[in-house]
Length: 114
Image 1: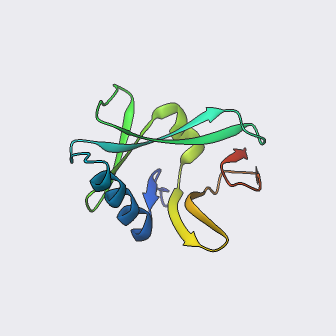
Image 2: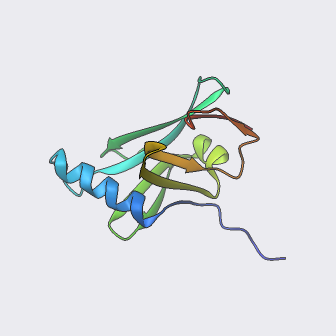
């Protein structure tokens, strides 16, 4: 039986947008994008994105090209094999998550349940 990777990824478009936002805010390369799951939202759990530059002891690090995604171990349990994407289309603009662990999501795409 083949082991399944437990990671978080970002599409090329999401990576480009993260780098663009960092550059626009004059944030240097020592920062990373912290991805976490917090209680709340219409489905029970919500995604949270922040720029951060302090690693915590239980942080898990996922690097793609020049972008580093970091999450704590508790959030990783909800985010295994999730992909961060970015849309700039007419139907909505912003980051969104493709989370295979979510049993339901809300209309805004920022809240989910497992």
